[in-house]
Amino acid sequence: MRKFSGDTLLVATHNAGKLEEIAALLSPYGVRVVGAADKGLAEPEETETSFVGNARIKAHAAAKETGLPALADDSGLEIEALNGQPGVYTADWAETETGRDFVMAMTKAHDRLVNSGAPQPWAARFCCTLVLAWPDGHDEVFPGSISGRITWPMRGDQGHGYDPIFQPDGFQQTFAEMDRWEKNRMSHRADAFKKLVAGCFD
Image 1: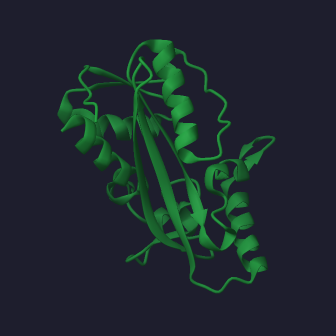
Image 2: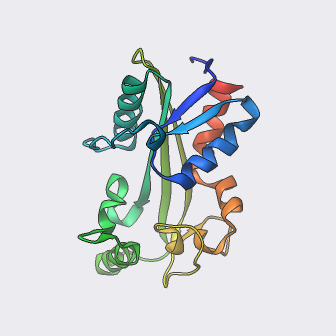
Image 3: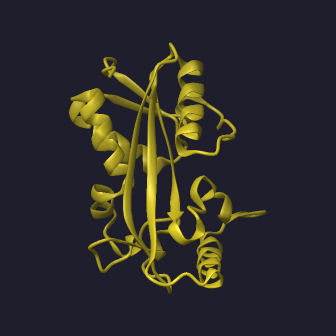
């Protein structure tokens, strides 16, 4: 496994919240984190059908364009009774002509579960795959996940995306009812990050 040896890491995201979260996680290692927007990078088209495939597209495009090691993630929700859907299309389910509507996306997921006749509990998991890519084309891959169930009706106003209908195993609250930092410590992204830090930074 290749260790990270530079002092600057490019994070291939335009999401300020995600950038802040990653910068906090890597601050003990003296790494300066910069985002895609800081470098004026466009978002490449995600054409793969897997989390690792799409994360690789983003990480390698950013590393090639900037000459910096680049970290990218792809994540989504897999619902067992829907054969793993929405999966890599998690954000696509929310797309409308005027932006993303996650209430619509959550309602779609619930309606499909009801129509499928699948018995409750509706098992699901959030997945995150991190790819750290270097300008020479090398990369390291770190998958993470957290298991839980789909609950209805929606509960909570914290978090984002499908958080109001995802209740992690062992908890009575949905992700959207949890404190943001508590959720971040146990999430699918946190799982992948522990593996990244152990593999490339420790």
